[in-house]
Length: 141
Length: 152
Image (cartoon, rainbow over all chains, first blue to last red; front, side, top):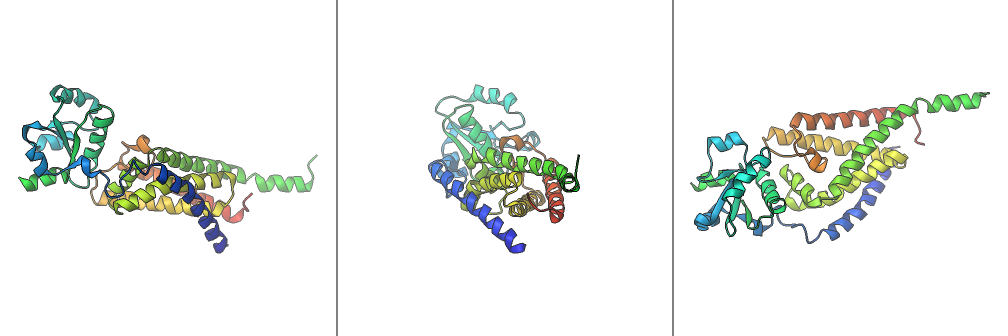
């Protein structure tokens, strides 16, 4: 019975492999095998600093963390209050300015999600994610 | 008029009926969860990566593979072909997802589960855990019911 169970499981595992490989081929140009964020969309604190006044900092952390401390001049824009905060952000944004989104640390994904929404929903160009997030900013400071 | 053989068939199939409903519900959950993730494997790879358990390239491989495994297991449960294999894989998957969820919580990771694509984006940890444990309970019940019943 155990061998039958293992055999059945292996057959299912093998069957699932076929469409999985097909999908991987189909999406081969839409995903990077090296990093979750393509290198072209990632920026370090030093690089963002070098852009000077041309940067709009976006804090994707929850409101309470933003209220506690944030990058000077940063605007709060998080998932919880996206609809409410986006118009405030758009009022400040102007073409040509680079947007740098950050969240707590390397392990958070809020900055990536906000960056994706800014690109897809707000259709804004030059949106970057800060490597290491707020922790990296603090270390640099 | 019902003869003894008809009665036997009725008696042997009647207890199966509630379990077939559980089969279909669990299968539906797996098929839905798999299908919604096949639509956006890039997002699912990102969701897996957020757990910080496996390196990014492994997340990508899993993002392409796991949804199809869920779909095939779901269909196997519905049609009762390769049934025990599907039950064992589904149980292993749910146990792994539950372990990953708890591990992420223990390590203080602020993440979305990605279990049902965007539908589960704002799920709280308790909601996520309760869903996993509910599915696990259903799978264990199917294991128990299946011990005494031959697959159709």
